Length: 74
Image (cartoon, rainbow, N blue to C red; front, side, top):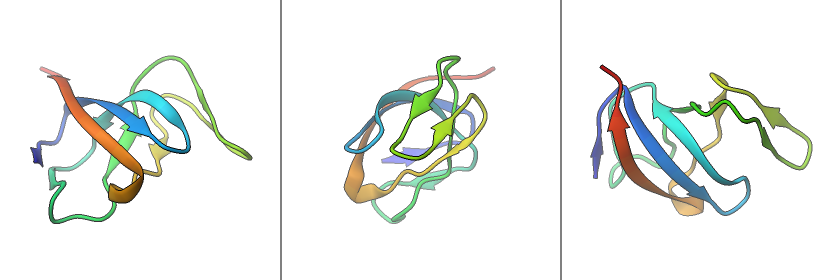
């Protein structure tokens, strides 16, 4: 699936749970292993040793998550 820069995404990640992100660059989920996504929601996401806040780059790897396009920033 091709994702464009600025698209809002629903992420289901096997380690960090479900959260809303924003694509910081355009990418193709079938060709890329790592996805350029920042946290977009107001609520922080907790990891084992890390906390991510809105705007932080989220670790997002092809084998660990599924993506659904939710919308686009205008």
